[in-house]
Length: 182
Image 1 (tube, rainbow, N blue to C red):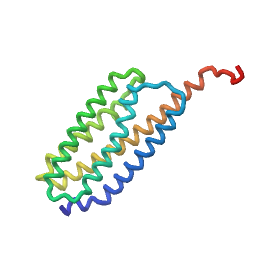
Image 2: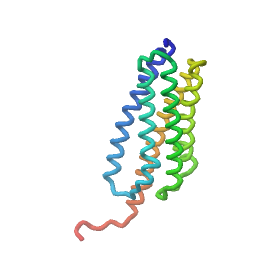
Image 3: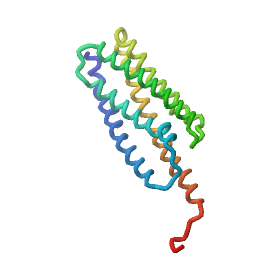
Image 4: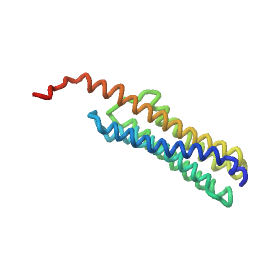
């Protein structure tokens, strides 16, 4: 499995970035939670939780591909299961996005919260199926999926922070303030 060893640095970088970004996401969510705003569990399940899941998926893939596997078949089986679970989760997130009423998703939201995660997790499944006969190419599929999940998480984190800072806070600032002495 020397082909897998060639990917060590890639997965160290991706895994480290994913781990750091998971921590940063929790810090940001904590800061946002301390500000008065409209709150909706539905919107959090549709937009917030998946971001942490995608960062966690990139971290998991990095750890999975660093394990000392004895055969390609073990790795491929786990990648296939993980890809399938990710596709199911993407479908659940898409349903949650459609059902929630706190925010009207636009094209970019559908792309980064529904379509691209489905592509990333689907490519894991395809890579798992191709691993036995085309292991080197399958590793590029897995690497692309891990990187895509990392970028999806980055985009969605930035989007959430921007929304809360630019929209929620500006709405709060427009509300009439009561004088502290009243």
